[in-house]
Amino acid sequence: MHIDINCDLGEGVDLASCEKDAQLMPFISRCNIACGAHAGSLEIMRLSVINARKHQLQVGAHPSYPDRENFGRKSIKISINQLLDSLYEQLELLQGLTQEVGAHLDHIKLHGALYNDAEADIVLARKITSLLNEEYPSLKIIGLANGAMEVIAKEKGRIFYREGFMDRQYLTPDKLAPRSLPGSVLSNVDLCLERAVALAKGKKFASYHGTPLKFSVDTICLHGDNPQAVNIAQRLINHLHHHGLSIGS
Image (cartoon, rainbow, N blue to C red; front, side, top):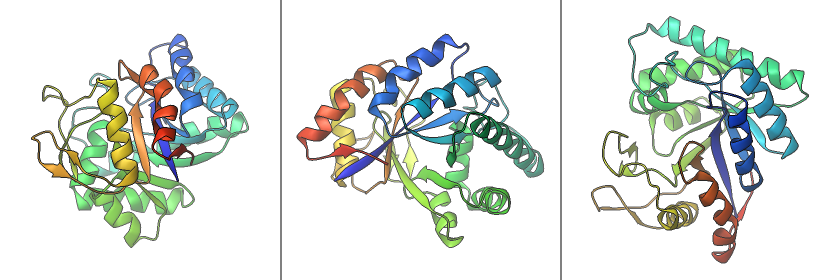
């Protein structure tokens, strides 16, 4: 049995940050690269794609609200047309770079507040999916297991990967605990590893408030900006092997 492990990368402020990202790449199967709206630059995006190609990772886009000031982690007031235009520009930028270096753009995963908003708002999820259907019909969609994007993607016949988070707490099966809550981001390595196994095998784990949750996922996210990300990634393979799992897309 194998499980897909994804990381949000290319979110640093300089090319040196790509070196840290590269330390994670041997231990994951796909990456989601920031497209410049919340983080990243042309140079960071290009080097991230080159490094991902070297490690034979599936390369995906990680677009967001156009809001670098808040790292894309706050909902902003923007018209749907402005948002869709921004998403199109972000995707075109990364797709052009992947083609330039001989790589392939495999999937899309929204970032931060836009990810959460689309999972909670069926209308927004439908608008975004319609854009993808029109302009990027071959891209796989990664989204929160049990959220609105899953409903719409399946309604539209899109390949959808149900995502779980090894380093975030959940309030309910379809809602992450906001980062504003203390302890919502898990930095305890052992707890992250246990969560990864529970998600991969569809076993019970505790929510932020201690109630049991249980659901299955197709891919598990390890956030590249987690302070313990490299340590978690380095220990993850052996921990998964111990539980009869391997990493693969």
